[in-house]
Length: 206
Image (cartoon, rainbow, N blue to C red; front, side, top):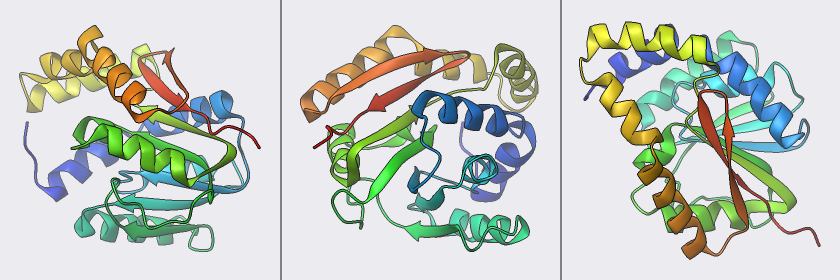
């Protein structure tokens, strides 16, 4: 399934809209981190970051390698009145332009499937985490009911949608993540949540 930036944003903004508040609550619950610096990797139009900002006191950096989507994110941040706490960063997940030990929590929804070198990306993410910092990286849909509704709407756009999502969430996909995380040499667990999963990387506390 290929979409241009505007089509992708419309799907994220309209069809996936119910996901972000629920996923933000799941991230808050699973990490317990509500203050400090957050990096949203592959932030797109900023919908997850904005939802997370609404229930935490986090200052959030929205990283994406596409300038077009970051322009949309900047507009959404301004509309939400969050310019003091949220900012965009045009960068590659494989070379994050942030200092070592500078981020409290890294979140991401959906972008992990597109990383060209997962091992390098996981190492970079671990590098920027503060001691005791955590990640929640995955592909959640929020809830089973939300996923069913999204599936119905997405099938109208793409008849191969269900096969597409099954391949991302099946055992082979999880095994590839395990292999990459082990090779990266970072402490982790893959946690199953309702209608999705989260990769939890924890930086060792000093």
